[in-house]
Image (cartoon, rainbow, N blue to C red; front, side, top):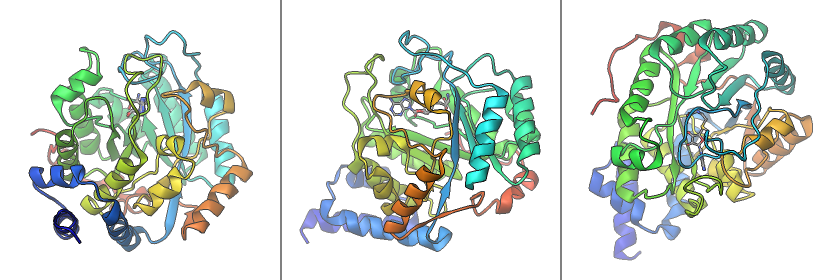
Length: 372
Ligand code: SAM
């Protein structure tokens, strides 16, 4: 083994042992080309994954229920200024129908994701969450609907939501400022994450891999933030350009870097729930398998009606990842079996929230890991 590889191997071992590195070490590991070492990195990541979650793959039924959005994130295909987007919004009845179909197939988590749509007021969302909770008492409800007030997050939690996905997008304030319009603030995003955690949600943060202007130092800050924040879930996927956005001419992130970071995050937070994202599957037909083999343990098949799925175009060529039919699910089951994993019918909570119960008893407002 040459000297560079020896020092990268040392860093991987160090990360495995200590679950952290210094900023300089993070940068060396991120910049280092590790083709010879990737199998070593991935096998350690799998070892940790197996220790906490065995060979189970948790599935989450994704319901993309609105593509109206009041925000203008520079990278996102459903930004408000994109006049080419065909806007749609599912009704409460449509959403319950998606849940019912998903439930019959074996889904025990529903992820409601959408743009920041003013139609969906607290009252409407609370009624929706309460209806899902009533009809599907044994399921987890995950929300991914952006930035809201603490009071709003609290009402949704009290109505029965268990988890919340809100990617921090980047832990570097200046980088955040380049990816977002001036009315969106880094501090507010971080504040929202702290509020969600303090309320007792299982929280997911995350970022795009290879987003415009992202440097290894930015990624090092993302990893340090993740270590400090200790989310229950981390969603990372490659940036993929959308031609109708200001960042449409930037290159996409890579599958290689995304898998490397998945494995690093598995070593950093060994018991995190880590999805192999749709964006990864969009760049590579075997992206889901590659993500799993790098330490991921969650997949989020799409339960939205097909025409909605097409219109929820965050980036171009989005893989359809259909999950609403028995065929699609059995195809996923086979693909996972082929790489030694099995799709499990379970809520798939983080292990510190057995059956979601701890969510209700968790101490609130204990610390604020978002402030630096
Ligand atoms: N509005 C909610 C929010 O802000 O969290 C949820 C919807 S938002 C579209 C979900 C995620 O999609 C974002 O956090 C972002 O990381 C990702 N995303 C948006 N545009 C993308 C692109 N061009 N490539 C890859 N991921 C993208």
